[in-house]
Amino acid sequence: MKQAEKKIIPIFYAADENYLPYLAVSICSLKENADRNHHYEIYVLNEKMDTPDCAELKKYEEEDFRITFLNVFAQIEEVKASLQLRDYYTGATYYRIFIANMFPQYEKALYIDGDTVLLGDVSELFNVDLQDNLIGAIPDGAVAAVPAFRVYTKEVLGIDADNYFNAVVILMNLTQFRAQNFYQKFCTLLGQYKFSVAQDQDYLNVICKDKVTYIGMEWNRMPIGGEDENAPKLIHYNLTLKPWHYDNILFQEYFWHYAKKTAFYNRICAALNAYTDEKKAADAQTEKNLVALALQEAAREDNYYKVYGKVKHIKRVGMDCRKFHRLTAAPSSFCRNHKI
Image (cartoon, one colour):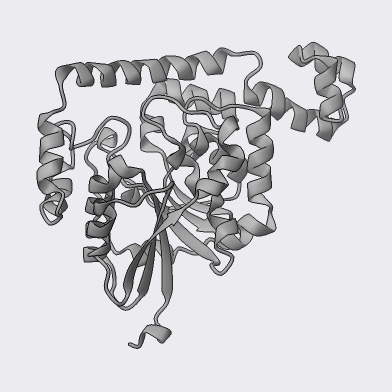
């Protein structure tokens, strides 16, 4: 099939310099399992990244498998002062927010994080019909497995845990993102409230609520979810469960299978060997802190859903400001700002 006749599949990653070895593993696995009857445009979103590692990743390129490193420094600068960051999160986690406006030529696109291994044909995932929904995504198995997180999504976001999706693998309806002014909604919400538990993932869930096409769990299988009778098509080494830090991670054999095929294998092995007990203890504390933070946010009287969720209800039923103030303890200025 001639290239001009092949369907173009745009796939986006986000990375900083430290993550390139693991990103290489993901791209290697994606390429090896992809249907070659399509043309793949791989974009690595970054800030000012130009290293020998980038050149190494470019070696995966072929006629129908192109890799482009794209600087999003200007876009991230617009919102950087408002971004909420903690622990292992960096600004890179927000890069996916800019895709729709930066690429008006695409109607849809896949976003995949670098801590993944593809075992299935990525074109199958891309071809999921989103209809008019904003996003195609997989329910977050880690959230469903932890009671504190289930409380958090319900009490803070107003979303049942079973409907809360993980943003590491998302199919984006870029046409609808633009039509529904997704970026403006994100900026507005960013100015109103700072989500501190899952950060950009929480923003995506709130904005896309009731506009999600749910995709099978096989496309975002996590070690925390345990074994399953269905063969995984994508493994996501979520949270601190990284096979380059620990040697007892479920599904680690898939990671190492593809790691050995990259030029970064020895460096990845060295990272595993250098991961100290102190760092592992810090990981364990990070996980405990995250659970505590989720419960703390759920208990707040001024959390997002208790305030803004009620705002939507107040506007629907036409409640006056005095009654709203009694229910929420919000100041009168809040009522004025939100036209209650």
